[in-house]
Image 1 (spheres, rainbow, N blue to C red):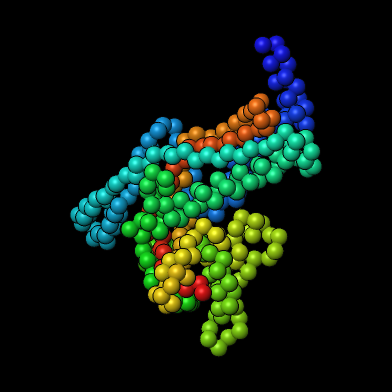
Image 2: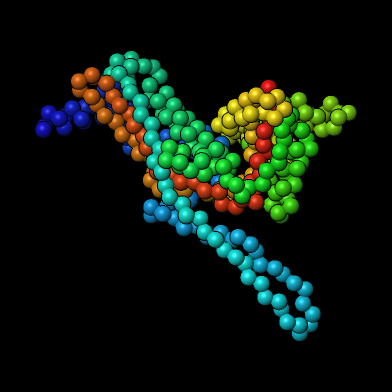
Length: 307
């Protein structure tokens, strides 16, 4: 036992022996990177769960206001309420590193592993928030799978008219859209759109390279709406325009109202040394949940041609 404690102390004190793999040092950093690299989490209201099930109240329909004459009777109206039942699911990633890689890497291999774990988990969460179908292997019910959200059928090339229709879908419910989430293939088409058919002025106001919005996934603005780019939207939907699998969807939302992202278990990072093979296993996991909060704060632009 004393020899084991000595080896543990040596390994944690010496970077070449794995000291930079101490979980306490990296777990918080990885979670911060996950949130920073996720395009979907930032759109949601973020909360911390204190139990395995969260019952989140929501207004299904609002009360009504009336003009009332002097000394007149005020007409009563009752809002109706519903609630979201949110349960967390575990997401995890595992990678292996040889002792030789740890010893010889410069810069530190842990920097690379941290970035990769964060990206992998962030992309998986993003996919679930945008596309999840509520199955055992895909537990979130994402924006695209929620049958109560508004839709605008594009069925062909993206146009200014279709974007305007989607904006109207939210504004017609007294909600101001903040973000349009698109695939890079749609981004390529948006760059070519003009404000009018007779103008050379681009519709998309691109964000300058290296600016803070770009680092957070925002690539530009259309009519004051942030444009966010992600690879986690499908590009294999059957396109009505071409009758092949070259279609995708875009998601228009009101930030903070569209969804709830709940964290039940803070990210934990675990390291394991395998003596038989002289290598390390690095595992990270967390328990999180997502639900569409207010369906009227979301509109899906469906079947955009990408070919």
